[in-house]
Image (cartoon, rainbow, N blue to C red):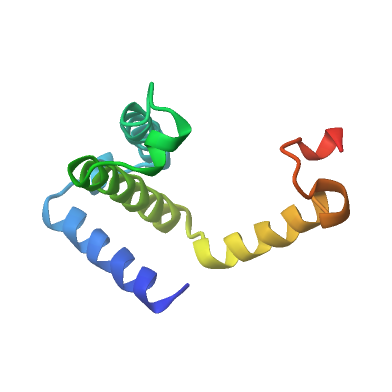
Amino acid sequence: MSAEIESLKLKLREFAEERDWDQFHSPKNFSMAMIVECAELVEHFQWLTDEQSKNLSAETLDEVSLEMADIFIYLIRLADKLDVDLVETAKRKMILNAEKYPVEKSKGLAIKYNKL
C-alpha cells in the first residue's frame, strides 16, 4: 500500500480506537455506511445536466469533496478490517479490466464487456 494511504489508515484506526468505535466498525457496517455516503454524493448531482455537473459552484464542490472523503475514509477502514491492499488490488483490477475491454473492441463504446 502507498505510504500516504498506509499513514491515513493508521490515523483512522487510532481515531476510532480513541473513541471506542471499533466495536461498531464491522465490514457489514462499513459497506452499509458507504452506500449512505454514496447516496449523499449522488444527491448533489441529481437533476443537473452533464455540463452543470462539470461546473459546480465552489460551495457545492466543497460539499462534494467532503462526501467523497467520507466514502474514501470508509473504504480505507473497510480495507483495513479485511486486510485488503487497495492499491495492489486496484492495479490487479486494471489488468482484469484491460482483458475484458480490449482497446480494439471497446474504444469509444459504453458497452459492458459481455456485449462487445
